[in-house]
Image 1 (cartoon, rainbow, N blue to C red):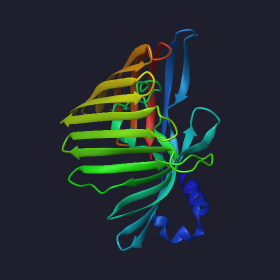
Image 2: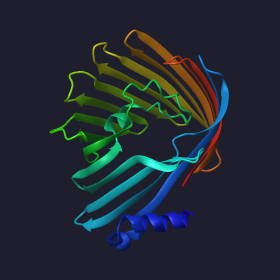
Image 3: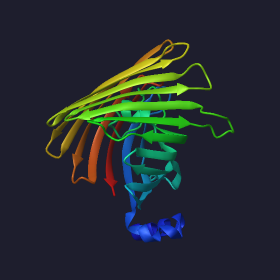
Length: 296
C-alpha cells in the first residue's frame, strides 16, 4: 500500500519532478487510543480516538549555487472512523540557501514552535492551557534566518483569503538553542484589530535523562488574558515519564489542568502510552487513555 501511495502521489505532483523522485519522501503517523472520558454534564464513556494522525509528502530539488527548492503537503488522517485522509495540515513551497529559507503557503506558526514547548501529550485536551490556540497558519509568507551561534529568527506575514489588502497579521519568533537549553520568544500582532495581540515565552532545559519545560503567554485585549504551564520528562531506558500543569486566566475565569503519562518505546518508530488528564479549563473533564503510535 505504501508503495502504491508513493507512486500515486508522485504522479499527482507533476511529471517534471520525476527526475528528482529520489528526493520525494512519503511519511506519516498513526496514533490511536482507547479513552475514558468523564465530563461534567455528560455521561461518562469509552471511545476509540484518533490523536492527530497524518500523512504527507516532502520533496526537494537542488537548484545549484547553494539553493534548494522545497515543498510539503500534509493531510489529516482520521484512523478511527471512515473519514480517511482529508483536509490540509500543511501545504507550502519554498526556497532555501545561504540567505535562509522562504516559504509560501500553510505552515507551522513561528509562535507555536517557540512557545508551546509543553505540548508533549497525545490525548486531546491536555494542551488546553495553550492560549494562542492556533498551531498552523494559512496564507503565510514566512522567512527563517540561518542559525547564528544557536540563534535563529522567523517572521511571517499572513494575508487574508477574503480579498483584504496588505498584511492582516504579523507573527515572528527568536529562538536560541545551545547544549540542553532551548528558549523561544514570539509574538502575534493583528493589523485588522487593536486587540488579541499575543506575546509568549517558552523554555526547555534538558539535563541528561531529565528535562524541565515552561511557558508563559499574554494576550492584549479587554481582559488582558494570560496563561502559563510547567512540565517535565524523565527517561528510564525505553520509557519516558511525562508531567504537565497549566493555568489559564481568561476574563473572570481562572482555571487549571494537569496531566501525567508514560511512554514505552519499542523502537524509534513504535511506542505504546498511557495518559491521564484532569482539566477545569472550560468543562471539567477527566480523561484516561491507553494507545499506540507508529510513525513512518
